[in-house]
Image (cartoon, rainbow, N blue to C red; front, side):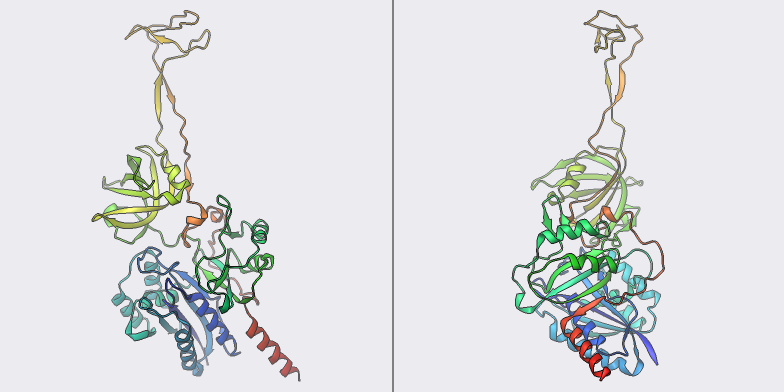
Length: 462
């Protein structure tokens, strides 16, 4: 009898090295060797709350969803745990967790997963949710921090709402820490060919390639896109001058804004929440030390909160400088504590309604068009150029002052965007259907697995 099995993996890397998605790729290869094992969805790369202070880089966890023979499930658990232990980058800050769930994902676990992307979750609560959901946990040395990510990866099934894909290519071990040998010109060519169905490949403001990470981890490059087919097209266009060990297409919540939760009242905010909050500007923007910008907004209940827009956001900060008191805006960002007071670190800005700024000016002369001059209080206006004298009841004209800002959505440049932040190019490509796409055949490749498959096929023919 076949059963569904969900495998969640988290906290196998550190700032110094390692990569949870790479361990996921190694496990995928191990599972694909067994022809009785069937993947029922693409591997999932789940980005958790990007604001948790102890996160490593992108705060990503991995979920693998398979169909297996019931009698094989225990052996699979053992193989997965063994692979994690062999390949996790273990140091004092690493707390690897592997989670296993058989059958359907319960609603209680799905709800927990959504919460974990939007706010800080309690480890003890995660353990209780795992028990109620019949999730089997493996933790190293009884350290439990990775439980939140591992069970959240299982819980966030990405079977409704918006999602994207990422093709991740990995390096040979001997090249870790070395400069990534990629033809940058080919990345520009790929971007031109595949846009808007791939995104955040390049930061054109700085002419900087964004598909390559900078750390010592195993990732050679990652291409983000709307569907697996476009990622394969993009892969063929990238020219690399070092060997690719393997690549895998992950289904992911990246580029979806999934982490932002709607909050109506400032009083509801908690530290580390990722929020979107509608309010009115109630104090003019000011630049502080370091080139950062501060402004204050108020909600409809007259509570106020300070918002910080940091200098590296560049165009976002430049836009915010033109805001005026009375403008209605929605800020997207993370709640942080500064000097025992909560504030919002803004990552995205929606200028919903601009306050009309007017100025009273002397009227124009109807004869020659020159600006007339006041002759004193209640004495009317006179044109010095043609000597025309206006009626005593003539008033100053109220004119709308043009502003250097427009209503709309503003983001920082791609190099400063979070993994989860939805880029502008995706605002016409979001998924709104619950229909699941059929998996393509070529979603995973490695040299060793490809060789083994060819050998097996040759033996069967003989």
